[in-house]
Structures are given as C-alpha cells and as structure tokens.
Amino acid sequence: MSFAGTVQAMITSIKNNARDRKTLYDSKDLYILKSNDGFEELLKKHATPEQLNEISSKLKRRNRINKIIAILVCLLMFTGSVFIVYRIMF
Image (cartoon, rainbow, N blue to C red):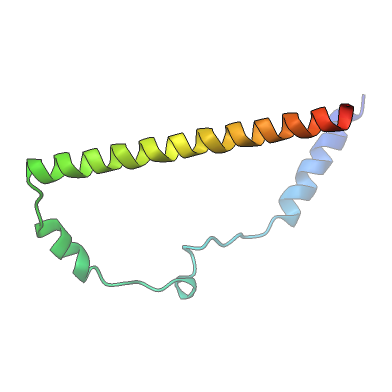
C-alpha cells in the first residue's frame, strides 16, 4: 500500500540529485570552427549529364564487384567451416 510513497520518494531523490549535463555543442572549446571557403567553390561547379551517367555507371560497377566479392568470401567461409566440421566428425 505504501508503494506510491516509495515511488514518489525515488522520483524526488532523482530530481534532487540531477545535474546539468553539457553537450558537445554547449562548450565551443571542444571543437574548432572551419572556414567554408572550399564549399563555395564546390557549389560553382556543375556536372554535365554525360559526366553524371559516367559516375553512376562507375558506382554501379563498383557496387556490383563489391557484392560479388562479399558473396564469394561468404561461400568460402561456409565451405571451409563445413569441411572443418566434417573432418572433426569423421
């Protein structure tokens, strides 16, 4: 029956012990502001549709190669683990 009083006491204790927490952005000494000089130059550059298509095809090819390599590595690991288990069993 005294559960509510106990819970209230815990809540009050937590509130009394609370401290102000600082985040990374509260203290400006923790990080250095960098100038955005290079950013303005990047905004001025434009890519032609041909360049965008070339970049897209390169990214697709690279992603496909990475996916194939990941599949091959998984297959090799699976085959190796099956072989090891087979050798241990028999």
